[in-house]
Length: 313
Image (tube, rainbow, N blue to C red):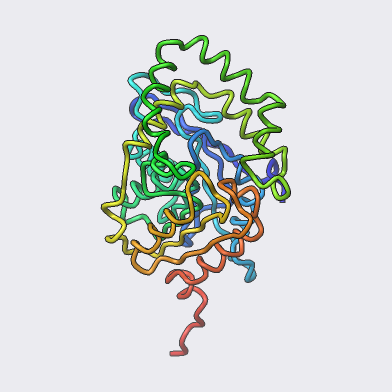
């Protein structure tokens, strides 16, 4: 299945003037759509191979296809930087996702959050409970991502300094940001130390760094600050929809221990660990993830009712 042949492009305008670029696979149906809520700085790079597999559904014959919707956050990818004052809180991004669903005619969804995207997914559940059929976390914590980054909370103390620098030295920051991120040295370093280079397609990771380089660094820092302020720990025990949490065994950004604690706090949550996976697990293990997700979705009440034969009258 070719990425270019099947993704349909949409534009959605919000009341505050923000414009959102959206891609979708498949048509709306009675089956809940998969709403992909990406990580900070991401615009679909990690789902180039996984997205089409998710759209194919469980593979149990005609009608098994499922619509997949992927939104570029404000100022990410092809979505332009929004007008100031920036609205970048997790609740705003969740409402953006709901507006996208309305614009595309999508009803109930499985909110799949990658990294920071699971914070958005949890806010989507909090604010749009009736249209949330299930939740999936791919290496996504419930909040404050820097609290456990590389096993320490030191980075959270440095964040205000980073935000201040991007505001004061905007032009210099942009030049450094745009030149360093997509450089071959940065790519080589990341492939050697940050991801599983034996599993990831280097072209996918280069796309990620190019997408990051195109972002406004001030907006990135401001969104990271919002993510660090946010937490949805308070609703974990109150979640009443099927939930799955998937962790990478080698993830140093959001450690397994933190994701395990979150999974055990959610009633009945399914817990999976992928050996050899880092924080980039959707790009590293798309086939394995597709299988885990298909198995999880097959157990949803909507899926089971559809699979049952009609009772003779």
